[in-house]
Structures are given as structure tokens and as C-alpha cells.
Image 1 (cartoon, rainbow, N blue to C red):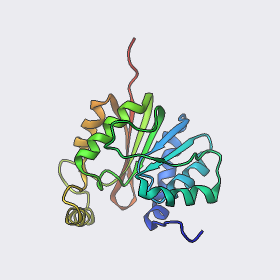
Image 2: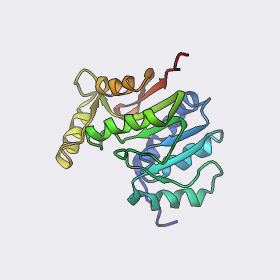
Image 3: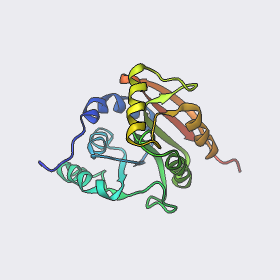
Length: 202
């Protein structure tokens, strides 16, 4: 289909992300992807992780492109993409046991990142996992010169965006009852951070 959106970065990183998700989401059943973008990741991961219901989501303007990818593949485990604005108080997803998001938190404002984690806190089940892919700073330092240039480009485009510091993001996760399970080094100075929601003691 000629009207499908396409992101070269998705093609480049999909396999290395899948290699991590195969392990981290082996026991998951229902994943909410926040910020599905073009929809390329959704169909690729759903095809290779058939045990998962892969629920894609994004803002309204991106839904037609995601729909084009989902419709062409016609997979049984990819329901229609849902409209999701992380700043909304009520999310259309009610209960999931995993959340995945790629290359989103550095595009959002910090207020939106905070809202995203608050929303995850409302929909993620006990023992559920959160997998977050993208570039992160550690102790306020860039992982590479290319990341520093990328951050400058982001801030010139939108002063509220930028590469986030791991400690600040981890604090948001801990505030909703998540504990860090993994921090996977990825190509091109990216990471996959994995948290799990703690069980509530009786």
C-alpha cells in the first residue's frame, strides 16, 4: 500500500528490540504500545510474538497510517489502534500486563512524560512490565557526541523535548510501584529500560 507511512529507524532497530522483547515479554499476554507512530513496530512485533495481543495507540492524526499497516498484515493479534493522548485523565485501555514505547519520551514534554507514567500506573496490572526504548543520559551526561547533537536538534525544534536522564525517569517509575529489572544496551547509543510492577502485599 503506497499510503503507508515509513520510518527508516523502525526498520533499523526492530530486530534488536525484538530480541529483547522475546525475553522480557515471554509471559505477557496483552501489551499496550504508547506512541505507535507509523505502525511498523506493531505489525513486526505482533507477527513474531503471536502469544501477545499487541494494542497500538497514538494521537488521532497518526491512526490512519497505523491502520494501513495493520490492515495490510491482517494479523489476528493486532486489534484496531486506539486514540491515546498521554495527557488525558481517562485512557481507553483499561487493563494490560505490559507496556511498550519506543522513541517517545524524548519527543514529549516532561509534563507529558509524567502523565504517561501516571497513566501506566492506572492501567498496568500487578507484575506487569514496562519496556521503554530510546536514548537516555546517565548522571546528566550524554552517552555519545551524536546523542548530544541529537538533543540539541530536539531542543531547537521543541524546547520542551530532549533526551531524558535515566534517574529522573526511574523515579517516575518507582513512584507508581515499578522496580527496574533491566537496562539493555542497544545499537546507536540507545537503551531498553525494563521495569516490573510490584505485587501488592495482602
